[in-house]
Length: 255
Image (cartoon, rainbow, N blue to C red; front, side, top):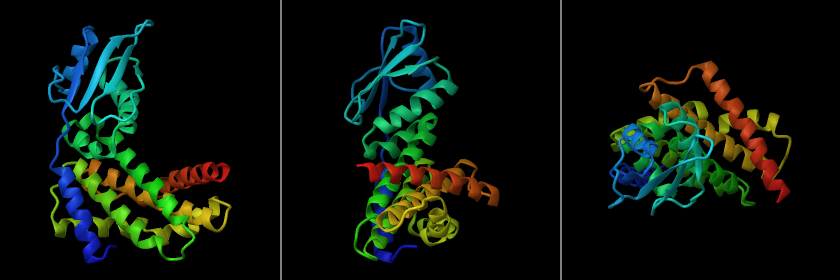
């Protein structure tokens, strides 16, 4: 999947990310703040915290959570229906992951498993957007090394997020397993059937769909204890990736 030089570079970047742990603090006077801190196993002091969640009661009985800190790029409040594991996974986790600086996604996922799936989804989407832009560059063939390196980095970051201990041999093995079913070449025909465009838009769609599909396959692989997705699961991953690629390209064309 990657040449030795590129493999070594993305391996080193992923290994560095895997060595970090984000420090999360939950603060606030409301009883819900203590409940959320307990659920997340987070600090209740902001001293040294890179990600801070300030909790306050909402007028209709819900809970407002305001993220801040050096790891946060978007400070929009999140309304949480209840302080439960299900609500945190469905309502807070995706919003927090999308609000973070990219460098904090793997450290957050490693330190706080409740945020792991959302953080890895954000890693996949971030790399997919990058590869869509690279794929749309009007220089034939120039995009492939960069796209492949991004996919490799994404897979290894997801592996690190799930606590995988990385070595060069393990990195090569993981990339080979996941690239086999979800490489860009294997996707191109299927993507183009559902994205009725040509030229740069088609290349962008392939870059996006191929990357997000590989990312989702990696998430499923590690969530289930390194079991490869079944044929039916691969088909569903591809279907979703194609739909998202079509929507993404449509947005680009409107700009």
